[in-house]
Length: 327
Image (tube, rainbow, N blue to C red; front, top):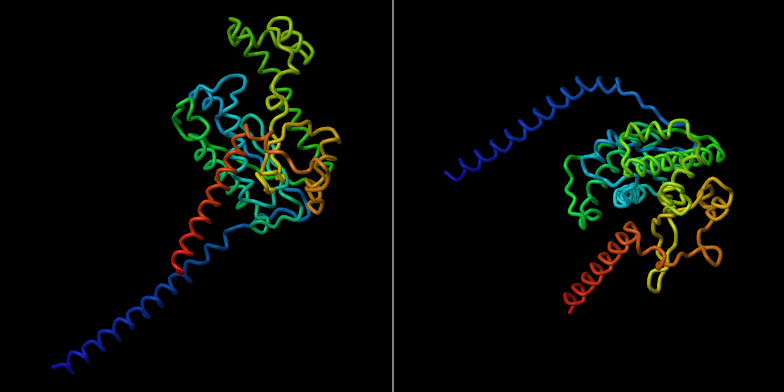
């Protein structure tokens, strides 16, 4: 009886093994049969030895801002949330030399030698866009918790990749984006102050039609007592994100920090030469290491410090458990 059961078990095992082999063979044949569809995929690779700029733009953000009652012309929290999302992208890609954000857009500059995803355009663009969007959603409550602002519907961002062959081309691109900040913010600041004074949107548009920058400055100063040059530099210049050494307690940590400067002139590029040449160390010079005291008000810095503290606490806890188990 036992012998019969044993033979029966062996037979079933062999039958099962044969069935698996047969299924694997059929599955492999089916896979080979349908694999030809991969031939329709086309790889669009970005040219080597060129700066890659991936620019994110909000889709339908006028409505998104209205629905969520963002302050006009500028909502500080909304801009800080964009910076948090920008930080999330830069944390994922060490190949990004600089990030630049304004309004509902962000530009990420990948180094010439970057070979992420073998420079496949579709992979790079789609991942940056999805990562930025998910980071925007992830940090929403952190930024808007004091306002108890609930997100009504998810935002969406599109992205494009553009190549710039020379350092001059890259600088001109970033200068163009910062000049765009000035033009748009000066107009919006003037427009929304006119609306707040009692004009309708169409009336404010008519009053600003054909005006130059000097005219808008005069309207702001004469009618509202606003010196545009005294407006927060973040609104006038946008946000630059760079990796910089920061003195944290008794050590120096590399953090992604927001910088609010004019990047059109040569002075910016002289102060931050590592952007164009990664071989240049960022720790040279008396003021190369940034003081934390000037950055503590920035949400992206606070978030990174919290992450470092959690890691430190986790390592200490793991070390304590290891010590107890070895006793």
